[in-house]
Image (cartoon, rainbow, N blue to C red; front, side, top):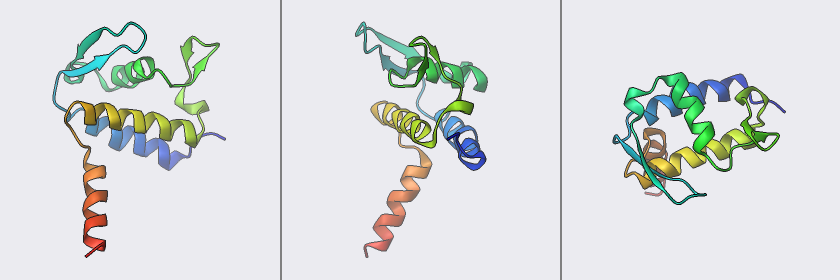
Length: 112
């Protein structure tokens, strides 16, 4: 199943834009070599950021175990996992995305 149009809009319209608000540069540890890198997404285009995220996420689906798959062929499940990885990466860099903060605020308000 391919991702829905609305889900695609959420990824590109919310997640990628919010990612640019994270503290820059962001720390990234290569899970294979254990080397640390600093990545400044403010100097990378939106298209470049999208491609970079597919490359640095070690769990992102690959074609022939090499090339990252296009989001046009991903299932909703795979895109959710990719978004969760991005959210965790932001969190590890000391930033909580606004949609997560909003969700927590709603949970707190509903629990009163």
